[in-house]
Structures are given as structure tokens and as C-alpha cells.
Image 1 (cartoon, rainbow, N blue to C red):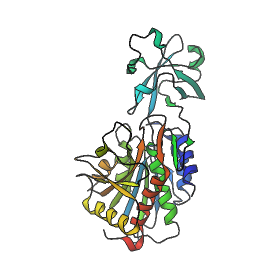
Image 2 (image 1 turned 30 degrees about the vertical axis):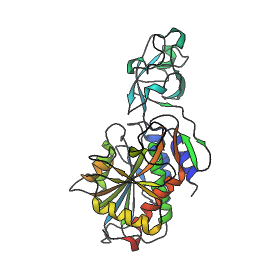
Image 3 (image 1 turned 120 degrees about the vertical axis):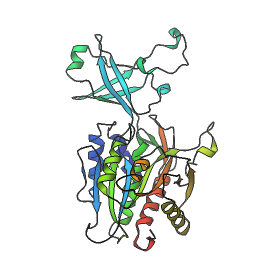
Image 4 (image 1 turned 45 degrees about the horizontal axis):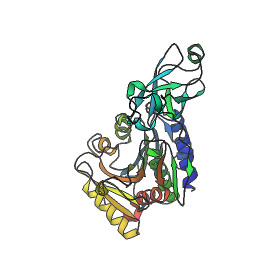
Length: 341
């Protein structure tokens, strides 16, 4: 598998929370190589199943979220400027003068309007939510033929290959996790596994993990491995709160996570010489793992994260070697001879 090409395809598909259709189609097409029933459900989740529900095996759920942060159109004023609301935790410090795409009846390009620093009272202040305005060059009448209230907007972050195995772009949170799950399935292809495998690429994580609640309930899994991104160290950050990019998968340790699953992930990583590091949290994880763990009568859940720089910006940076480490750890967990849970 060319992990960089897979990640590029995933990141270039738009899929702001609540409107994940294009990203979901891309992910479902890729998943169908391993799970013939791969499809999007009524809530925008992508699901697939590998195995036989009547073979007596437990079910292992592999999960990542498919949505990305962005905006939603709320108003078009008389001059043709578009007002928006945030979908997810956007970083308003970065949005002035960014180019955007409004996903209407046809894609509409625009820029987030900003005053020149010469005429601002405080040129260093971040934009307030109510100040975010998009200029497309269209009149109101022209826009109303192309754009509707509720249409989603994405920042134009170009996917680019950097030095070595590092790449940058938008929506790597959490298309990197989706790529890791696909990599795991590729490693497991034509192998006998200890579990039936359910796959969930969940919608709406950035706005409340609603897709994971529904998808985990429907999957009815016994065990789950969720993957998301976490903070990679950059100058100025607290080292104890961050992973190190290029040092491997981040195994989560938290009250909401299963100690049994976490211990097994540690054992496998040591025995198979998979590079890992650890992320300790005192309560919830802030990921879909929180919702998965309490689905139905409870699911033994582990979390494996990918170190990521510049989270929730158009220039997120990840090392694809870390994505592969996450995928390999998932695959080794599912291998027939590895089962201990």
C-alpha cells in the first residue's frame, strides 16, 4: 500500500461535520477492497464487516473519524459577503486572508476578508467569530443561485510531501487515522484473524462524537481500537503533554480505556518491536474512544494516536511512519496467534 497516496486521496475529499458525503465515498471505495459490504449509513458513518457473524469469534472494532473542521454558511448580505459559523474547533488566529471553497451547487472559491494592518486598531488580535466574512467576488443575486444557507466551507489546505516521510495538508485529523485502519486491513489481507473485524469511519466527531455513538452501538463489538491524532511536540509546548513525531504510535492510558486492552497493546509493541510512546490522561480522552467504550453494555476499548503538529489548521503535519506504526499495531492485535482477550 502507498500510504502517502491513500492519505492524499482522503485529505483532498471534503467532509465537514454533518456533510461528510464526499469523504465518506472516498473512504468507502478504499474500504471495499477489504470489506465488500462497505457503505455509508444514514448518519454518514462508513461501515464494513470482515468475517462471519456466526463463527463464534468475538468482534473487534477498528475506528477512526472521517469528518473535518470547517464552516457552515449562515447568511449572505446585500453586498454578496458570506457570513459563516464554525463547525468544530477552528483556530481563528489563522483564518484572515485564507482561501476557501464553499461547497454549494458548484464549488465556489473565496477568501476570508480582512482589514489591512494599517487600518486595524489591533492587528495582532485573532478574528472574532462574528467577524468571519467570505468574499467571493459574486453579487448576492449571483451567489443565491450557487450557494444555500447550510452549505459547508473548507479552508484550502494543499496536501504536500515534505522531507522524508512527513506530509502536510488539511484534514489529516483524522484522515490519518482512516489511513492507519486501511493499512492494518492491508496487512491482514488473506490472513486468518482472531476476531471478526468491524470497521467504523465515524461522522461528526468534531461536533460531539455522535457518529461514534451510533456506529459503535450498531457494530455490537466486544473490543475496540480507536485511532485519532494527538499533539506532537513543537517549541513552546509542554513536553509531558506531547508525543514526538517519528517515534511511533501513542498508546493511550486513561480511566475510560480498558487496562486489559492497553496492556495487550504494550505487550505486542514490545514483542513485535513496533515503535510506541505513551499518552496518559486523567479522565476522558477527548476522542471517539470515550463514546465507543460505553456503547450498549460496554466495549473494552483501546486508543492508539498519531502524533500531529499544527492541529486544526490548514497545514497539519504528520509522519506517515507513525501512521504505519498505528496500523501495524492494530493488525498485530488482530492476528490469530496474538489473541489474549
